[in-house]
Image 1 (cartoon, rainbow, N blue to C red):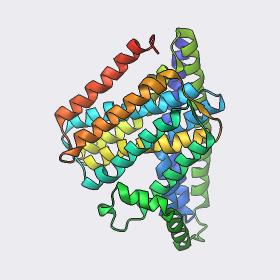
Image 2: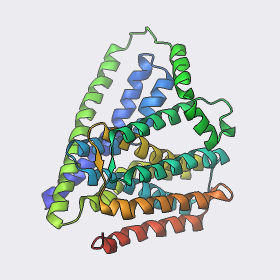
Image 3: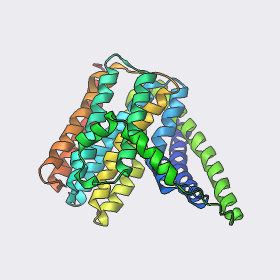
Length: 339
């Protein structure tokens, strides 16, 4: 058992630390060879905050572990709002711009409710996953198409999506992208490439250890894989978001902290679950359908309500979110025998 705990923690550390280094050095190479900031934004930066969840979910999908997939994603989103939102609210009054509430927060609510709709028939299939990926691509392009960005709300995103404007914007941005012919600093690039290769291997084995030990603990302790995903994996993979958010609040950058929560939740649903369905369908267990997913909708709407009045997350509101998160953890013990 001690060895298994060690392997679980080792897998988690490998996954988190290697993901951070992987994204950093991949971005360096991308800029050196002349790839535009637009393309980097659409790929590396966007994937960066959700890479731990993405890789672990892909590995779980390859092993047909649907309970772990949904448990870790739903649990991570609940953790982001309840734990991270609660902590940063308690640390300081966190203020954001109104467009974050009118646009990104509404898109997060939309993605969360859409996830539940897709789960009603107890399976998320390839078509539904592909729909998530299209939505995610459109969302990224919508953000990067910055004309009058501050005045754009959720309704503008729906129009942008319905008219397929994201395809037009992508084509225009790619045409403007300039590929640099610069071929100096080959040694520097080679070092970065080697780092990427080694961290990529570390990410793979970190995810492998994490999922394998999760399966072991579930079987050994008689705890469902869904609950382990909702708690241990969700908390572990949310640590980068927690660190970034606390650091941002201490520097007075509340908008980054709140944006990090919202962006991560959107990415987890649209990108991570969408990618997972490319490998296998995701089957929905009773605990997820009848409790954890509904709780996610509840805490998401509560987050919106608390931010609604003056675009601030106050200390007492942070306490409310933290109490809700603690209640969720305790409730899993009570709900387990019922579902």
